[in-house]
Picture 1 (tube, rainbow, N blue to C red):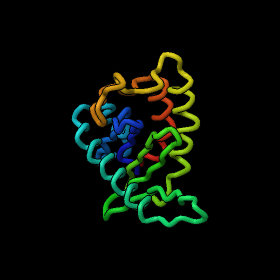
Picture 2 (cartoon, helix red, strand yellow):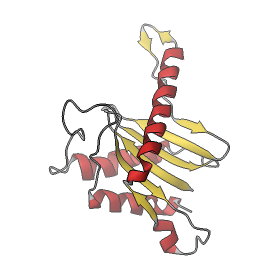
Picture 3 (tube, rainbow, N blue to C red):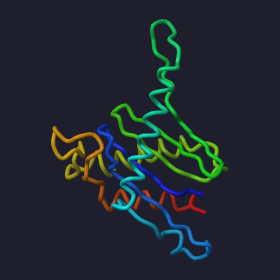
Length: 167
């Protein structure tokens, strides 16, 4: 079961957030599609989530050992608690793709890679009307961004892809 999906840019800004509200009646298809997209109410949660991922990733980088003067790329891929699991993927351009699922799900790295390479690249990167950098200006402070991905094709394709994993 998937609870939410997040994308953070290289400036620590949440550029996309989708949270599903799963009702007790999972036989109702409208219950599976309810929830929020880019909600202002989740801004603080996004900052806390990114801060946790950033801090844990920094710790793992400092704890990793060097082999032949090459630093081991020891990125966080999954964080588990008693009730949920956080799956992460960082791109070479500094984007973070984060998927929060129930605890039973073991590995969603292929799902995150597919979302990045087939959905995000196609509908955001290759879209000439979409900004390549979601910062408002070069002087924007980290974590203060307000621009979000509102591309309907991206949202609809992402929804269709993740729909089967929601229940």
